[in-house]
Image (cartoon, rainbow over all chains, first blue to last red; front, side):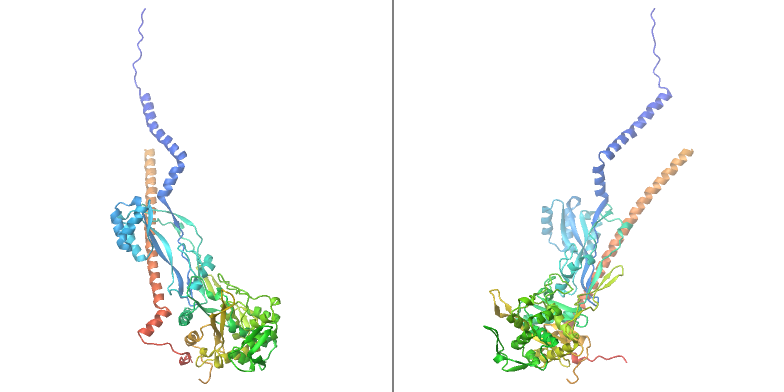
Length: 547
Length: 85
């Protein structure tokens, strides 16, 4: 029997339909899910890097370097916000328009920008240190569609409002705000913030989106020097004039307040960033050093102010074959003031020998020769004072009149200040105070007595002796009407490269202080031209009763 | 109906969050621009102050006093300080 089986007609019932539709609907999210899983798991790094680059920007810290100011708060070095302008070629839509605008606004020849454009792969700098006015013009252009591709980066420029004034002390810092020399380097940590990069969110055209985290405590400090800009100006002007008048290679001026040790001016000529000759230059002082040997002998009691020294016919044979001559006078005996007034090498040499090498060495060290000062300025020299055990009689005599010893100007002015200050050597200061932005003030220039070098009575005698040098001796040019001035001249022959002393090469100096009754300034070596305006400026009354 | 209402609420909340985020970013951008302008104005002000310092430098004042007013440096003994009584 044949039986035909008839299959039931294929009918989608509602349940099946819903199952299929459900499956279909689920399929799409499933595909998306799988794709997302793939992207987020296997491609995570690539996409997060892309997002990071698109959304965030890394800015160098806005590093406002602290100021360097004079004692009265006049800015000697200050950082000013500027910008650098660059072009990112790939974002530029209208090359001609961008180049024309930048060329006109920044006063840069169009050709130069085009050359840079052709050389660069993508990004290149067009200009640096753009001032605020130009920057505003650039920002306005940047906000237009044509401005795309221009990038402005903040940076700081170090400005010196008084030009080269005190630049040898201040030193230099580079465009990254790092101190390279002078005070800038010595106090780099106080003047600058830590270097780091800040992650900031940026908008479509690169503008920074403000975030509270961007605000931070600024911990930079302002450095106040003991330098007084007006005193510095007088010192620099007088030094320049003096150097040009005599056709010298270089010159140094230091002005110190003897009672506190504060340096009111420190000038070098020619001016080089961070190269202060007052600390770094070593030389044989010559006759200005006679003050040291003679004050030491008076203090030790090996000579008395009333003594007369025999001149040995103005040809003194210190040792066999070694003769010291005095050609500037024809006297057989000289008193101590006369030795200083006439700058007698025989007198100073004999007094040094009488004092003895050990004592002279002791006093030289006590005055601070052969040691660095506590200022510890970059590249400061300590000079050279050989141990007395190695000295011969000739060495002792020659040190008495300033040869065979190498000193720095800061050491010499310190020694004269000690005499002016009643025999007490004061610690020299270059930094008055450091003021932090959080209000903390660190006082640096407190008067610090290093030691008593000579007795007060010796100091008083030496002041009179040095005053007589200015009134009757070689220091007449330092006289100032109405004021008693004390000081000593010096002309030392410089060591020549061939050996021995060069007859045409000299170090000419004068070191002195005024007014003698109450010394306010010790000055090395251009005296009258600096002391005269300073006495007037500070309103210091004349100490001569009859003038 | 209750589920529909809940979905609407969630959507509204979502939109609110997104809108707030956009507003925060927009405000942040405005603040950023304003801060930049403040910084630029401060920098311009600083330049002007530095210009004042430069113009009032002893060198400049001495030169102007000499050239424009014919003044000369006085000797210290010619200066008499009047003291307050």
